[in-house]
Length: 249
Ligand code: ADP
Ligand code: MG
Image 1 (cartoon, rainbow, N blue to C red):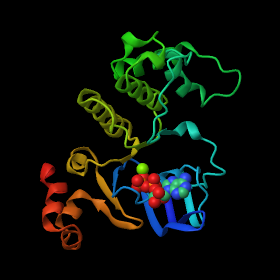
Image 2: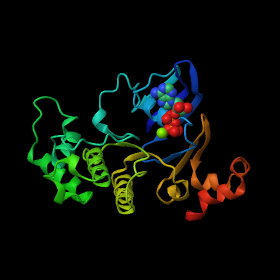
Image 3: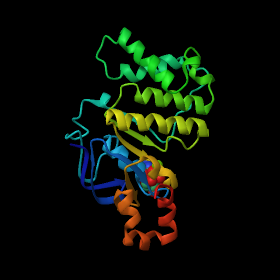
Image 4: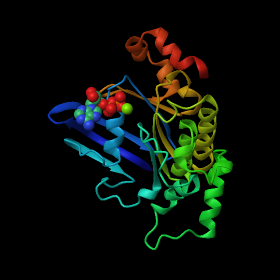
């Protein structure tokens, strides 16, 4: 089943072409590492998948329908690139922020069941933030806030998880924790993952596919195919191709 399908997509900001003619599909259970230079359109591509940006041409489908008519947003977890950092006066506790991940998928009246409370406890413990449960989110460090954001994004066990450079500003321990959690969701729950990352050197340790984007699809396929591709050796130079490949030969 195709979770995301994109055909001949063009996006412009004002009248400037960001990319055009992009076609690709993401299948259920895929773990796609999306890499490419700064400003190459990666964030724009996923915002278009999420219906946050209107295409200039072409089509996007998410779970088989256009984002503008898609209604099951609780199936989708999204962590944007630029984290809003919480003001120290923001009144919500860690537990409340994590529970917002559940409430977004509910109709009114929004009440938490005992099953919801168990899910909250599970998500907190998954990210090792149980002890912070009653703390105000704004009082936490950046790395701790990021753990809370990740717990909120995974609490619904979304079928599609989209993460835009989620570990750029976090400590190594949170980063490892994060990758372990995402790995479990992908392997055990068949969660489809799209992870925008700069870390092409280790992307192959966890992702099953590489999408290299530079205002067009430069490469999309398995790491094995990438590593064996003569075109990619030519495009990147054999040295850089090797850097992307060496960790998982
Ligand atoms: P990436 O995520 O790969 O770094 P982006 O998708 O953020 O790239 O940006 C792609 C291009 O679009 C860049 O040239 C960027 O400057 C431009 N851009 C991004 N957001 C906007 C915006 N809101 N308005 C105008 N231009 C934008
Ligand atoms: Mg970006």
